[in-house]
Length: 359
Ligand SMILES: *[C@@H]1O[C@H](CO)[C@@H](O)[C@H](O)[C@H]1NC(C)=O
Ligand SMILES: *[C@@H]1O[C@H](CO)[C@@H](O)[C@H](O)[C@H]1NC(C)=O
Ligand SMILES: *[C@@H]1O[C@H](CO)[C@@H](O)[C@H](O)[C@H]1NC(C)=O
Image 1: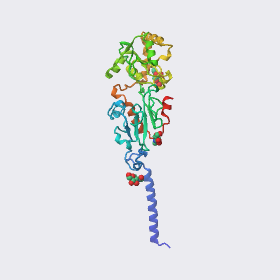
Image 2: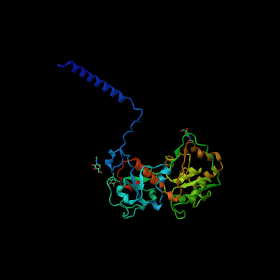
Image 3: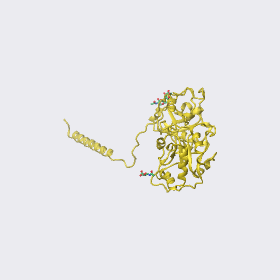
């Protein structure tokens, strides 16, 4: 039997409880105006400190160790941020940090034939990246590295980290293109291989071509003159040193930047068109022989409106200057690797790297 007092108290408690519940429900459903919504919880990408993913710390950047300086051309790692806005990893060349490094970037050409200059132990979380930008023709096979790597860095589009200079799409209309002043017809630069001794397709084609048209060898251009001198040529021979899928180097990018028409020798036209518009270059394969190419160039030299059509693509795309100084040669690839490891945590085992590279 409940007394009158007890009933009153019980009733009040029930009422208060109900009120409280209603209040709480209301309170929860009103979005807070003061606090921004919480970001989705991001999983820390540190593997070796699995532990710290529970703490509220910013996920730390993975560490990438550059095992060799390619051809001893050093640069300041902060260039990745200043030149490419890349800051996704902690880059180091300090080999004593090896055991902590999440990724190790290994320049193929620096590996000794007996592998004695590679690390011997290997932490289980660590990924090794094979860094090689040469075509199969210019690749020396080092035995024993076929199954050492987890990622590939190459000029090839199907590499884990493909590296090349790309056109960028223009937003809106670009400013009207003004053709640079021209005082040379056809130019080229003999670089990696000596034209006298080279026996490849490139030098055969070149020696055939010069029978019908004058070609200026720009020789050893100073890097600061590279783009301006290229601009003064109507055509530039973008002849690759060997012919392989995707092996299209900055020999193409240079004239596109400079306002010069590239005459290309390399993989088939369709492969070029993956990267640049089909009307931005002249492909030697579109002609029966070098003589026909020369005649075509001489004809274009007399036909300004036909020549200018090779610059139409600039309405929709722009080319960016690649780094031309010798000591800058490896910056792009190393920075791209840093960007990749900062963004992707998945890696794999590359089986038979040579089968892939040479295949
Ligand atoms: C985190 O690591 C510390 C030592 O570094 C260890 O004592 C602790 O048990 C770990 N905690 C978890 C949740 O693994
Ligand atoms: C990386 O590659 C090596 C060599 O093939 C392999 O032993 C290792 O398990 C791979 N690492 C990961 C995390 O997949
Ligand atoms: C540029 O892009 C526009 C729209 O995508 C297209 O219609 C036009 O043909 C392109 N022009 C050139 C020269 O490629």
